[in-house]
Image 1 (cartoon, one colour):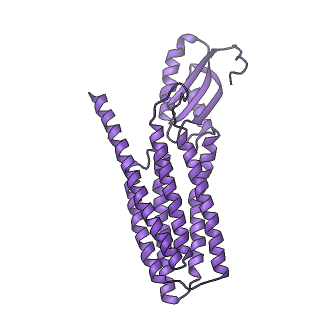
Image 2 (spheres, one colour):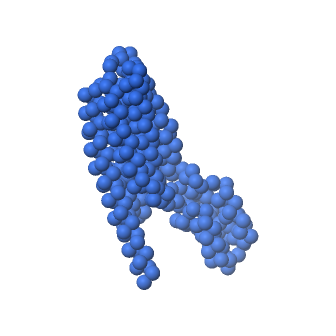
Image 3 (cartoon, rainbow, N blue to C red):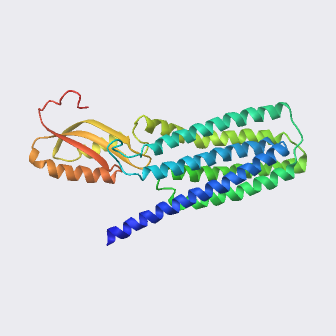
Length: 299
């Protein structure tokens, strides 16, 4: 009975997150259209750059939702791990999208600095103020589940960053209204670009690392090695490999040397438990006796 309730809870969580993704996508896409129109009408690079960033976040939300759904698909004979790796690829694609958005923002901002134009500060303020509300609301939707999956956390952090960026655009509009200094608009555009690069860099680095099966950043290779060797029944280990199956699941394979195979089941249970506590659940162990030569290609 308990197992059945747990399954229902997971099912409700999946449905809830799907609805959150869908609502966030619709809400932000609507605002992007409005912000682009206002940016072109009032010739504000701050609004246009913010809209471009928000559009990249809409794409990110769509991809994150797709990855979230695919990660729930069961493994089959062709994809024996299922589609969990998609979550890592989506993180990489999202990081690349943001970097491309930065390039366009910088180019547009430099052009505006070279040829400054008058801007309607009031229009900028009111449009960006709506953005603060929408981005903050979307971030709030994800706050409960942000620590369950890297893509959900990424969506949450993007929305928080967008809310802060929109605050910056509001400030630029107020400065334009009070001083008439329109140059602040492209300057804010460059600041937005810097904020995006700063918030995206770790995502890009970790996504690249995981996509080539690097050790996840939250796993310390030497510490895992020490954890396994700490078992007094283990004489030595080799061919230790650690990688990510998805943004939430890590895997490990290792060859363990024993002096007595009668201890194998005891060692196996202990190693699996200690690795589970260290954040690695998908574990494959191969046991060998001392002085046994490892077969060619077993690494």
